[in-house]
Length: 248
Image (tube, rainbow, N blue to C red; front, side):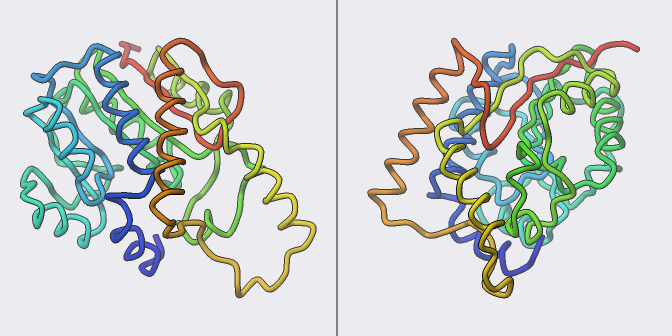
């Protein structure tokens, strides 16, 4: 990840509408998939530890986090989160079949060998353990933001299902997310391709918003989170999946 973007994200991740709504979605998915406060949970690519803090507020006690960024590991410790270590998701130091749940929120797209990451997560998951992931969707939405974030790809739903199944997981649920904003974002990407402008001016799409706008977008995604308990969205800016480790 670009260091300038990492610093920018560090300053916004606590309040930014997208990150808050995604953390709330992930907590709900853990509970819906059978996770309990006694589950041993790994946040793979934990960033500044705000998801871990939210899980603690929801009663989860046994949570670990790993991140490749020393800055983020240090930030977690500043926040009083100590079960944190600087590790590569591709080759962790954890013993086999240790965790009940692994969360990887917008992590796979940063890893060149995503199949290799799944093999490692499967190794450290207990039998029937759950893997909960989010990834950016649709190659057509690729932009300078992906490049600054050092993404290797964006995913289709079918590609994600294939990746999980060939990796030894059963897909319990999968859906697009951030459905409402898909159309304006898609239109913006089309216009950027038609009228590219100065590439030097292109950057990430992480903007500090006025509180009223930030809150409105947060409430919009919270509504989507509630609807996801009864429907799957046909399109969206992201994909989430809940997968279960199976014996192969």
